[in-house]
Each structure stands twice: as structure tokens, then as C-alpha cells.
Length: 185
Image 1: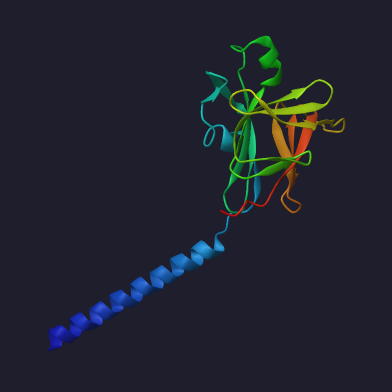
Image 2 (image 1 turned 180 degrees about the vertical axis):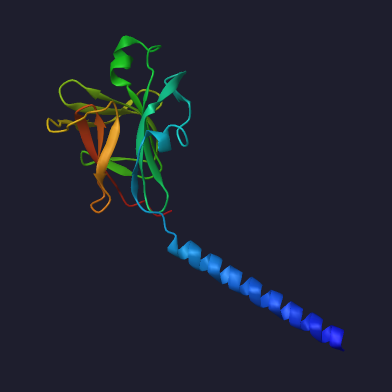
């Protein structure tokens, strides 16, 4: 009887310890929410963005050092990187400067861009162009020149998670974007 009582006591202790561990894990998961954040090149180019991307029938190299993005609290991402477009025809090369990946719908210049993979470019005349993978224009917005930026870099995202408004910069040129609510379904 003594041995059985010891087994029951041991089993009860294991059950209590397991329950406490599960509750602590649940509590940790609930309190460890991801914070919305701007992502810089080391976080994007080395960990998230593919080395090569497909666009208009070709595969090209991504410039990991010139990548950036935003991670939202639910861990969805908007990522961008400059690409090597040297193998493309000159007319397309002017428009295709970078690659944009978005897991959520975003608004750029008041226009909606659905989740997906896109080519983009900042063109003369303050134009930001987004193209689908077949190089068809899907979005055009006005870009702005930021004359007050102190140290322009080839590509970066700036913004504040409090407002949810971000700027995608190529040098001093930028477009504003923000996340849109996802469609139900």
C-alpha cells in the first residue's frame, strides 16, 4: 500500500507540474506579442528575402544590403529590396529597380496593392511604379523628394508604428504606405 500511495503522490505531482508548465507557456505566449517594427537590411536581406527573384521571364539577384521592411504585430510582413536589373531591356530596366513582397493589402498613394510579389521603381517626374511579375503596370503613385533627410541610403523604410504610416525611400525619393484591413474570407 505504501508503494501505491507513493506512486499516486508522484503521479499527482507530475500532473500538477505539467499543468503549471502548460499554463506558464500559455501565459508567456499571450504576453510575448510581436511589436510592430521597421526592419533593416540585416533582418531582411540575410534572413527573410530570397537571394534571387523571378520577374518578367528572368531570375535576378537581390541586393541583400539594400533591403528593408515592416513587421506587423501579427507577424505579417511588407518587404522590399533593390535588384540587379542589368539583364533586362533598357525600357524595363528603368522601371524595374526593386522587388516588393507584401503579405497584407497596403495602400500606396491612396491606391490599394493586394498581397503578392511585385517589381517597382522610382521614375523621373516623381512617379512610383509597381508592376506585377509579368511587368504589367498595376499601380502608379506620386513620389516625394525629402530634402531634409540627412543621410540618404539606397533603400530604407522609415515611419512610426503608432500611426501605421511608413515611407519607402530610394535615396531621397519616397512613397508613403500603410496597411489596409484584410478582406474576410
